[in-house]
Image (cartoon, rainbow, N blue to C red):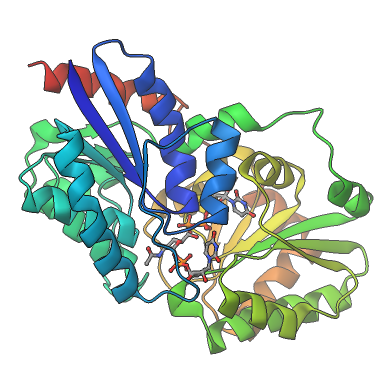
Length: 367
Ligand code: UD1
Ligand code: UDP
C-alpha cells in the first residue's frame, strides 16, 4: 500500500483536485488522504460539498484580507505536523496558488516527492499573474512528477530542462469536472430572470487587477450594458472584500446586472453553458469556455493558456476600459466576429485526465 496525500486550499484547486481524489479513492492499493489549507473557506467548502469530498485534515488558515505573508507562514507552520503524521509516498499539489507553492516547499524540506498537477503553464513574467507565475515555476523546480495538461505545457517543461520521463501529458482535470456538472435540464431562478436576453457572465479577482484596473474593467461593462437593452449580466462576485467593494461601486446600480454571491461549481458551469459570452480574468474559466463553445474576453495582459487563444475562443483584451469596451461592443454587434469565436473545441483534454494521473501514479509508485 502506498499513500498519496492531496493538498489544496482554494476554489479552483478544489474543482480540479476533487475529481482526482474520487478517482484515486477507487484504487485499492493506494491510501488517499486529503488535507485542505482552508486558504478559501466558503468557496472551498462549496466545492467539497458538490464533489462529496471530506478532508482528513483542515489547516483552516483563512483570514479576512490575508496577505501573501499570512498564507505562506500559516500553511508552512501547520502542514509540517500533517506531513510527519501521514508520511505520504507522494504529495499532490495543483497549479499555482500559495497553498500549492508552500505545500511543495514543505514537501521539499521533508524530502517527500511532489507531484504537480497542471504543470508547465507559463507566462515567464513573474508579476503577471502575480504571484501565480512564480508559484508554478517554483513548484516545477521541486516536483518529481509533472502532470502537464497539454503538449504546450510539456514543451515548456522540457525547454526548462526537466526530465522528460517524468513529464506526462494528461489533459486538464477541469474537463473531467465539467463532464459531471453540465446538464441540459438544469434550471435556476437567475437564469429565468435572464431568459429572452443575451446572458453575459462576468468574474474577476486577480491580485494584480485589484484597484484601478478592476475599476476600468467594470466601467467598460457598465457602458456596454447601458447601450444594449437586450443584454443581461450575472456577476457572482468573488468573496475578496476588495473585489466586492469595487463591484458594488461600479456596477451596484445597474438593473440589468445581477451581482450575486459565488455560485457553487455545478451552478456556475450550467450558467456558463447558458451564457452568450464571458468576461473574466480567471484562469480556470479559460479552460472551461472553449469546451462549451463560449467566447471569452480575457481581461488580463498575459495568459498562460495560449491553447484557447489558438482555438479562437479566447481573446486577450487587457484591463484598459476603452479596449475592453470596443471588443465587447464588437462581439455584441457583429455576428460574424461572434460566430468566429463561438465554436466548441477541446484543447484541454478529453475528460479522462484523472484516470491517467492515477494510472501513472500506480505505475511509478510501485515501479
Ligand atoms: C487565490 C489565489 C489565486 C487564485 C484564486 C482563485 C494565491 C496567492 N491566490 O486568490 O491564485 O486564482 O485564489 O479564486 O494563492 N475570501 C473569503 N472567503 C473565501 C475566499 C476568499 O472571505 O471563501 C476572502 C478573504 O477575505 C481572503 C480574500 O478573499 O483574505 C482573498 O483570498 P486569497 O486566497 O488570499 O486570494 P484570492 O484573490 O482569492
Ligand atoms: N467558479 C465557480 N463559481 C463562481 C465562479 C467561478 O464555481 O461563482 C469556478 C469556475 O467554473 C472555475 C473556477 O471557479 O472552475 C475558477 O476559479 P477562480 O476564477 O476563482 O480562480 P482561477 O481559475 O483564476 O485560479
